[in-house]
Image 1 (cartoon, rainbow, N blue to C red):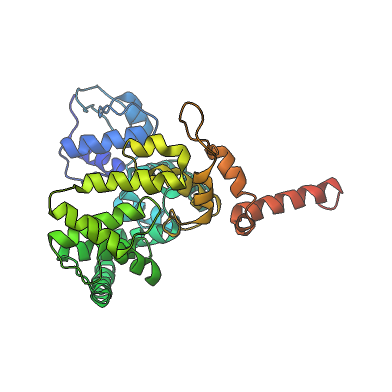
Image 2 (image 1 turned 180 degrees about the vertical axis):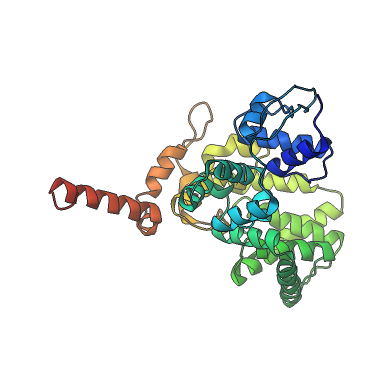
Amino acid sequence: MALSNAQIKQIQKIVGASVDGIWGPQTKAAVQRWQSAHGLSPDGVVGPLTLGKMGLNSGAGGTGGSAGTKSTTSAPSTAAMDKFAEDYGYQLSFLKSDPELYGVFQKAMSGKWDSTRFVAAVKQTKWYKTHGEAYRQNLALKTTDPGTWKQRVQAQIATVGDLAGSIGGGLSTKELAQLAEQSVLFGWSDAQLRNTLAYKITPGAKTGEAGNIRAKIREAVWRNGTTASEGFITNWQRRIEAGQATLDNVTQQIRETYGTRIAPGFATELKAGQDLYDIAAPYMQTMAQTLELNPSDIDLFDPTIRKTLAGGPADKGGHANTPSMWEFEQNLRQDKRFLKTKQAQDQTMSVGNKVLQDFGLVK
């Protein structure tokens, strides 16, 4: 038979959906996310397998996400879930902001994990591995304390506006708000913010079409690992405005002229329209994870990234002769900065304990 409103509410609490006792698209989508996170087929149908995982008895089955049930284990209340989250060092609203994190949280609750096991599981998620510490902390603030977050962004809008004015350029209200939020979210330093502004606006340039053209050229230059003089930018701006060239023409010339100088082995990809930044992104991400650095601190001007991209000449098939990601990671482990990471310290402690055990000094 179909689920009752009370039963639907139980399921909605478990999957993190809005609790209203109504089976609709949002509830079905939440069930699918929950099923995916718990190793079930994400079909949105609450059948015997799903009910079993939820700790609910399966009764007479229904269709399209319905089944008659009587709960043997009450679904945790919001207050209980809040308490679990706080015990793990997180806010429930933050965990619900990402399906992967919420899935881990659900497993932790049902398995009654301790905080050590939960934190270890979070660190294995894709979300954790692809974001720096500053980002994680600021995202938590954004989702758990929106009032304080809004105040910080508003203050940063004023800071960004003043800095843009001092450089001699202007940003639209939308651009100003986006850049302010991005800089707070990623924890940019003043130097990083100034460098970013330098590529978004041009000293003395007017806002509008001319300013937009110059900003796009600067962005293309930066995304292909080089810098450009004001004369270079002005020359291309005038040609575009005169209809003698397009932004796409300019961007592609920058890729092929400057990107290939830095990474000759990726000439084929650059000619096909990829920016050097996109090609280098996996290396920058691996470097941030291995050396435990803030991802926003690594760009195409980093000596390690630049050396890796340079590699050797392309092979006869035109393929890049650069280190594989595994080789690149092994090279990073030889970097003196690796010795300061928690990974290296843990390895050192492990080896030391093994030596002591071998000599019978510790058990």
